[in-house]
Length: 318
Image (cartoon, rainbow, N blue to C red):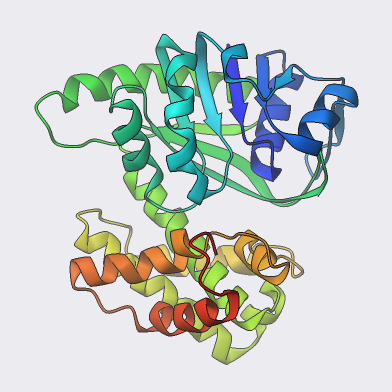
C-alpha cells in the first residue's frame, strides 16, 4: 500500500516504521529536525516488540510530493487536526482513507468537515511510547495495536458509505497485521474511541494535575479514587452521546493502568511539564465542554481543568 505518515512523533513513527519495515510504500510528511533526520539517518525505534532501524526515508515538507495515497495516517497532536485536514485533500487516491490516531473524540468530525465524510474513518491506537530525539522513538509499554472503522452518522447515505469504508479499513488493517501490529476493524469505531478517551483523559488529567507517575497514582488511595471518578465522568458522557460502553469499562481500564510500567506518564502530562503545547483542550477541556453541552456533571475534570489552565496560561494550544 501507498501510505503517508503525517506527523512523525512517537505514535506516527512507531506505526509508520513498522509498516515501512514490512515493505509497505511509506512516505513521511515532516518538518525541521525530524525531516532532516529521516532523510539523512532514517528512523530508529527501541521497542519491547524488538528494536529496528530503517535507512534514510522518503520524507518531505512539500505537500505536492504526496499523491494517490491509499491511506494517510495522522500522528499529529489533536489541536493540529483542523490545520492539516485540508492539506491531505489532494493526497488521496479515489478510494483512499484518512486514519486519525489522535486522543479524544473530535478528530473524525473535524476531518469530515474539511474533507467530506467519504474518506474519513476513525482510529484508536494503544501504545506507550515517547520521542527520544528526532526520528528516534522508544516504545516501553502496552502491546501496540490499532482499531479502525467507520463512524456512522445516521444520514441517508451512511449505510452505503460505512460498507465502503469497512472494506478500505480491512486493507489497511491487513497491512498493519503484516507489519506485526495487532489490528481490528470495527463496524462502528465510536465505542472504541470513547473507551480510549475515557482512559487517556482520566490518566492525562489526574497525572498532569498531580505530576505523578502511574505507579504513584494507582498506589495511593486518594489519586486512584480520583482516576476512577474521572473515568466514570467520561463513561457518562459517552452514554449521553448515544454510545453505549460495556458495564465493566471503568474496572477494565483501571486494571489496564495496573498493568502498565510504574514509571509511565501520559503525553499531555509530559508536555505540560516541559511547557510545550499540549492536548489539554482536546482532553480535559473537551470533557468539560461536552459536559456542559450534554448536561452531564464533570466535577473532577472541571476542577482539574481550572487548575491546569491557571498553570499553563491562556494559549489555545495549552
